[in-house]
Image (cartoon, rainbow, N blue to C red; front, side, top):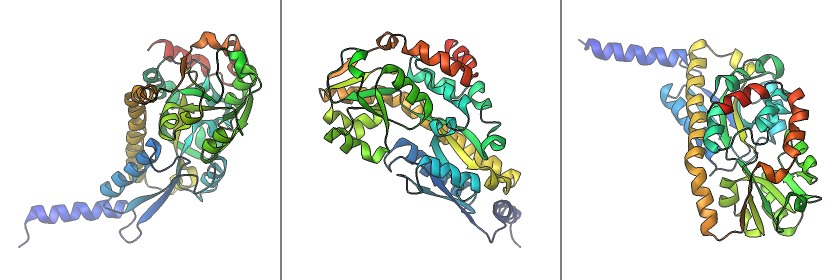
Length: 326
C-alpha cells in the first residue's frame, strides 16, 4: 500500500501542473527589454523566469530577450498591445509617451536621493497609476523598477549650465526629458543605447544623459572632460504584461506571476539603492573629472519644466507630497 503522504504529495504536484497549463501545454512567455545581458534589469528578468519555472514545476517558463532583440521600446509596446509579446521591462519613458501622467516621475529634483526614488516608486500613489493601463494602452503593469539617478557626461568642460547650450546631448526619446534639455538650451538627441559609446567617442554627440551604472560599466567616462553628478532626475522602469495575454490566464496564474515579478522589480530598486554609491566610488577611483551640482545649477529650468508638466501630469503634486514625507 502506498503511503498516504506520498499520495497527497503526488496529488498536490499534479494539481499545480494542471493549474498552470493543464499538464500537457507548458507555456513559455517571451520577455523583452533594451538592456544588455549584464545589466541589473536583465538579470532580474532572468531571475523572475527562474522563479516562475521553479514554482510552476516547468509549466510556465520565461525566455528573456535583452539588447533590443525584439525591437526598440516603442516596437515592443506595440507587440504587447497586440499580444505578440507576452511581457517586457520597459522604461516608464515609453509609457509616458502614451500616458502623460507618467511624465511626473521625471520631474527634475522630485527626489534628492536614490533611497527616496525607490520609496516613491513603491508608494501607493505610484502603484495607483498602473491601474488604468489595461484600459488606456492595453498592458498590465505589475510594478516598478528603476535605474540610478541621471547624470551628464560631457566631452567638454562644464562649469555652468550655459556650457550646455547648443550641445548635442544624447537622451532617451521621450517628451519630459526632451523638454528639460530644450529648456536648458541643449540640443537633445535621441539615440539607442548600443550606439552611445561610439557616438560620444567620435563626437557625434557632445554629451549624454546617463545613470552611474552605465557610465561606469560601459566606460562612457573614457571620453569625458566632465562627469556632472547632478542627480537631476529619477529613471523608473515598469514591468508589463500584455493585457491580451493576461486575459487568457487563470486567477492562480496571474497571482503567481504578479507576486514573483513584483518581487524582482522591488529587488531592482533595492539593488540600485545599495549600489549607487559604489558606482560613484569606482568613477572617483578612476580619476574621472567630476563636478557635483544641485538644483541651483539649472537656474530656473526646473520651475519652467514644472509649469508645463504640472498641467500635463496632475499626479505630480501627489508624488511631491510623497517625496516630501520621506
